[in-house]
Length: 95
Image (tube, rainbow, N blue to C red; front, side):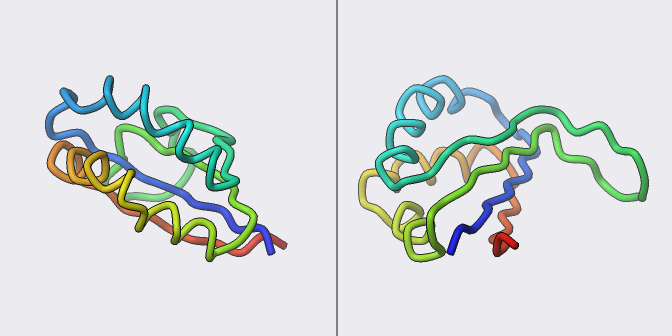
């Protein structure tokens, strides 16, 4: 069953982004994932902190998504992202 990954990022230090942007997309694709949307959100309703960037992906299954996130190849990039940004990730089942 298709799932969506929604990622909210608030940058603390953007130095990690260039390497991450080059290396991670092929890893996402190898796991069967696709980038669907990315950018600064335009808040239409609601209150609270607004992240700098929201990224939306789809993956063929929760297992594929979790496998990507746990993969040894991704770990150095996850660590650099975690050091350089406050991140919230949501896994959502497709309808």
